[in-house]
Image (tube, rainbow, N blue to C red):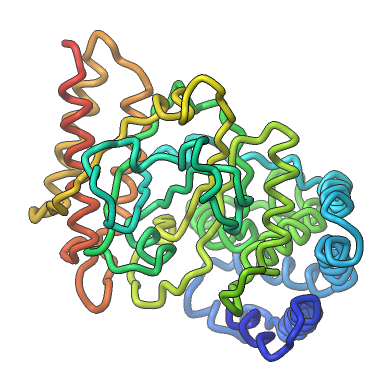
Length: 410
């Protein structure tokens, strides 16, 4: 993110993109081998260190691919400002097709934990779950441009944490009305969600480091793992597309050039039967630390809303979630371990119930992991789950489990 902000001295966004490419390539040239960087203090597996060095050597030798990936991705924005929106969409789709960027669809199970949606608390019907859903079709005139949505087209934005919601809305939690969305697995398991994530970093830090510690011993040049010599070109193109789609806004003017590439991506995905996008927040989360690397409290979701003529909202999408509200900002003051134990007991009840199904067991299991991953986190020098935001998340999880328990038949 710092590299992107260093481009803010350029007046035109197209010039910012050129500067960012230059900074990125300069950083690539400065990559050190593991023996010369802090990696040697973080990782001590010799095979993993060798893998990292092989990856680093191949990446540095592939500078021309990085350069091409930037030029092709930047050309999407250039097509918009020089030609037309349609030309830019065609350019993006050709870019994604030619570089295998459409082979990646996020596994639905990764986003089946509890999700949150917030509104500025200045409306009266805070007890109506529909007030927390997408903007009604009859009110599409108030739908503004956002990063992954286009003016006039309602989209359902969800966050993986209340902290993410607070950051995106740039409003203190006390001034927000929050709803928790408990996804129903069977209703949503076939959704096609396009992943805009830091695939390279996440694979190396979250997967490979653990796998090597457990005895994984594949060389970098292998046919087994998804991040390898054979996948480097596609990985670079994926990373740069994600990076340019999450460029921070320089100014809050009517036109946001930083939104053009992600909005064109949104349009192209809509036209090709995708159901939404998963993407990392562009906001600053430097005041939270100590969380597990799998926590992903900074992830957001833009869920596309299919139009319906017989209802002012999409009832099928609404019924794909159990929506839980907390208009009075109640919090859960007990230890998060109590909720983890409660989740184990609930999962056992689900397994023993007459109507055992994955609608219940998947989101509870996924969110239990989230709590475990965030249990050691510190937020503004306070334990995350002792903060108001953290306790509100625990309260929602408690309510969600009670809702499921009340619906079980034994």
